[in-house]
Image (cartoon, rainbow, N blue to C red; front, side, top):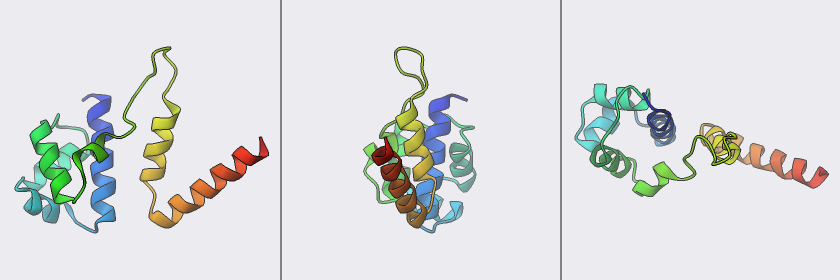
Amino acid sequence: MSNLSLQIGKRIRSYRLKSSFNQEELAEKCGLHPTYIGQVERGEKNATIESISKIAAGLSLPLSTLFENIGGNTDNGNENYPAQAYDLILSLPAEQQEKMISIMQMIIQLK
């Protein structure tokens, strides 16, 4: 499956966990099957924009939130480090996100 499907799936899983939903609860809110939610989260299914929109609504998120800072490679072929950092921080609980931002700010100040 594509890198984009994996990125979107990881984001959906992260937001689902932050909302304290299991896959069954999210599926019920979205009108989708729990197995499908799991497949989307693992990047096994290339979800339609309609399904992703339903999932975003079930998570009470604007659809655009799931696509923020998405990207694999930049034009010159280098990795998209800002997108990787965004996904890494997003995967952490809120308390750890705050700590990561503080650490990043301290590193930048040392520059």
